[in-house]
Amino acid sequence: MLNVVVLVSGGGTNLQAIIDAVKDGKITNTKLCGVISNKPDAYALIRAEQNGIPGVCVSRKAYETRAEFEDALLAAVDKFNPDLVVLAGFLVILPEKMTEKYSHRIINIHPSLIPSFCGDGYYGLHVHEKVLARGVKVTGATVHFVDAGTDTGPILLQKAVDILPGDTPEVLQRRVMEQAEWIILPKAINAIANNRVKEVGGAFFVEE
Image 1 (cartoon, rainbow, N blue to C red):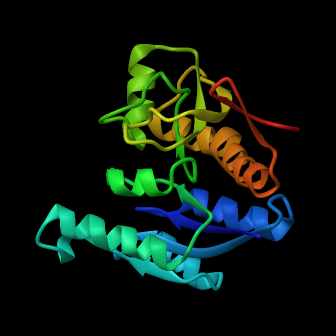
Image 2 (cartoon, one colour):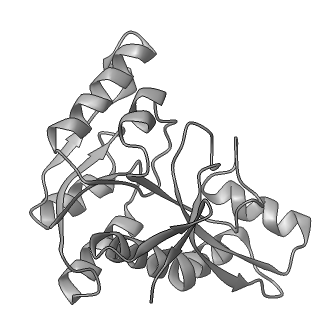
Image 3 (cartoon, rainbow, N blue to C red):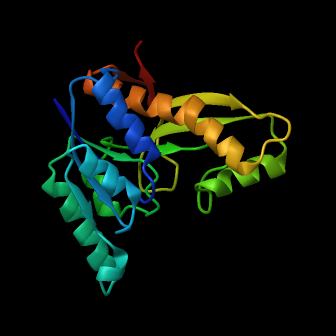
């Protein structure tokens, strides 16, 4: 059984997709053991409570220094003893001590086809604004392992989404979530839980 803790800053739509996939049997051999947010008013914590998943808030504002906050965040993760840490819209750069301790055991969902439109400043609606401003015709989402960089870890899954005439950032954001994020994030978790992730020459693949 794969113990999974989900870190999220906002509404938790990707968290809900994971919860639903576990209930529907699209994710097997997996237990959602906890949800951690850095925002006390994050709706994701309500989603966790509604589904009987322990929820914890670790707010930067509660600590005098960044180092104290990072230690508290790592301690909160450790308390759940997870096999996998899932970043589902978590707008905090993880401390290096966490990425080292959970090397190849942290995955993130990013709303673009990495290496395009990623890195510092590329998060949430900003990604879709910049995609549309650039005029590209295809975007999508990426699940990748998390390392010490920003969106630089090995890619696990990607799914493309067409950009349509008249798209606004909000419309495109919703389509990317529905057609890519909510599909490949549960798929990645299920693959990890069932030992269907293989590494070949430093690249990672999901066995169908």
